[in-house]
Image (cartoon, rainbow over all chains, first blue to last red; front, side, top):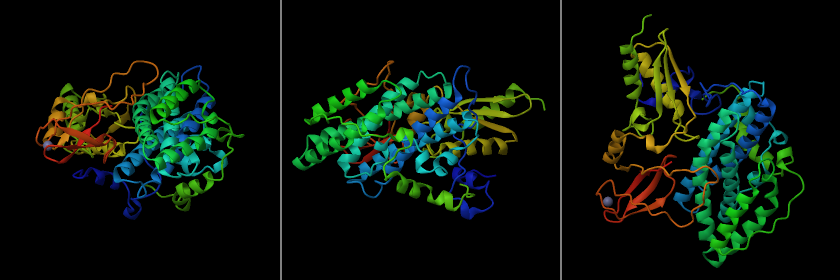
Length: 275
Length: 171
Ligand SMILES: [Zn+2]
């Protein structure tokens, strides 16, 4: 076996070269990590929490990836794609952890590709269409601020694997929140048009804030971040009017099913394909 | 099979020399992602790797690269373990690794931000850090994008020689 080019070592395990470049069957991202669930941790609850956090990340990653070739500038396209990639990585780790502890032995692909919209537990905020750049930035700001605060608390979780995934994620999410906050200030404090759109985006995300504030008490921290950013941008804080229903119980908008159809299409058409 | 301390050291050296798939001027040891290499009594080499970023697509290639090099060097049984805790930090890039990055026109990272327990503070005023140009050494440089071609790098440019360059982010 030669490893002159490291990527070639990956291909050598497959007899059918034509199937190398797409598909499922990635190596388990938790390969070799001690999978034991500590005493006193409810495996079902832990798995449900991991799936919830993974669904948020996977759906967000898919929306961020949709900006590729469409962002206002190449730098922003690269930034949004990188943020999506971090979230996709978090999703993979979390799905793998869920599969280890929920007793089904499912792998990450089973969760990502072979569940329907009603089985997803992501917040509806994540599945809303990208809209304009202002909406995507404001949505990312809210999502990253919430997820960073939540992950920071999860670093003390009694499950060491979830705690480690969270500790890694905190470093990444701090960059995501920073990126979105700086853009939100720049847009809010920019032209009349960017200001109008950013203000509208804040109003559009407001109904979906409540869904984020359920399990851990991170509401004050997220609101404080939003207040700082809106003050710096010279924009009003959005008025909070919660919508009925919740993505956390599988009640989604009509936008999730088409997103999943695109995400899952290849895997479902070629269920045996391997990378 | 009788294993010796010499075999263990040799296995470690081989694993350490595997190049990083995305920063090929660095070895996995330079990058600080190779956490441990040990030799079990039955001859199995156990190598522990830690990912740089959760979504780092190079992890599978790193694992495959370490296993392939060790197998080619006469260690048929190789086990690769993923270590998530503690999370990788750019502070683990070795002095040798930093020198190689700079030689290849990539600015090495500064010290990673120290994190106190509790909420991560949001800093809205731009943090001024001085990143000397890796090409001409001039201190007058600016960030063009916090995100670059790979997760671990940002894009900068030099205001003196006008060349763009990559910069490994502190994390
Ligand atoms: Zn220069």
